Length: 441
Image 1: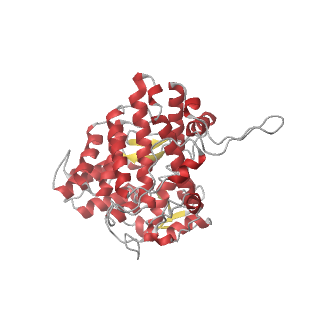
Image 2: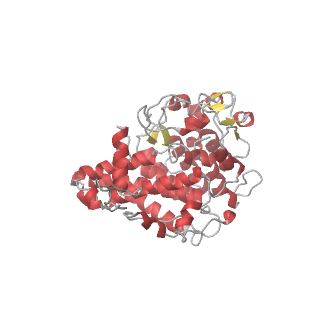
Image 3: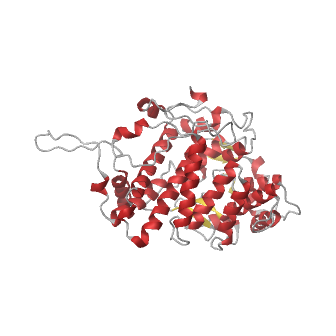
């Protein structure tokens, strides 16, 4: 399966490197492009390319771990410590990332390669058999939207930092890149333009995706990602409504105990969307860096662990200084869990003075009850934000929450340019249209 997934990803991307061939006289002219009409001929070809886009999405430099631990390291203010020997992750927690940091550059490259696969799929949906066309289109749009959302949050100023209508975001590439040098001509779209495209794709995906779809993207996954996007923008009514659609579907109930959610390698009913990891395919780098049974590079402070109530099982879900959330080497990477949806709905309702789907207190206590924590008597903005911190710890939310809430990261203000990743220098070397972020000029 792994061999096939990598083959499809390469074929669908069309160009990820220069292709060359030669005859016995070594005089065949090299080629640098493969036309889509030659690579994607049938419905099966396009659907195989879509599978390849999921494989690309699960790269360890994307949802296989890096997107999450970037947000934790950059957003850390003493909750964790990086004790590993790798220099480049240490730059994240120290907020001193260099323009040639290969981690940041690799995430950019992998994201755009995955986006290019989805663009090729979307450009060829006319070849997909009618009964599967809507689903294929919806899945590709979900993947593309998720990646653009992650890119604009990491490589650009936050939505609430200045004017998103003029702040540079990331390049929006919405058509297949067939030749190697085509990707070196695109300038950065604004933050607002990127968000608009993300929401447009997710709206379309939610409309087209089925309710059930195995472990691939579903209608619920698209709505959940929309809830996350709206929350980042401070559009609380829309965030609560999108989260409510996920919860009201009844398809993603909280599993019995907090530990049960993380003690298995497979998906649970609570998982709205997850990256599939097996012994044959995929890499869970959250396990690599956070688990004491692996590198153990990221340690959790005792002060953070002490934030949990005495009878809150989440407070005991540690092995000394290591979280047990990612202790399974071949455990699936949970990108969206329904616990997050309850907390988004609670925050959205609190800020709007509404009770869409349920009262904020009910939603907060549902999450706390599952963990065995003492129920709250009153819900407040502080209590829901504290619950996000406790429930979603180390899953990639810390930096983005601090930035949207305009809270300091240690001694740095929320809008410090050092909290934004640099546009990779190698990308700027070939694309003079790419403007660098302020701190790295």
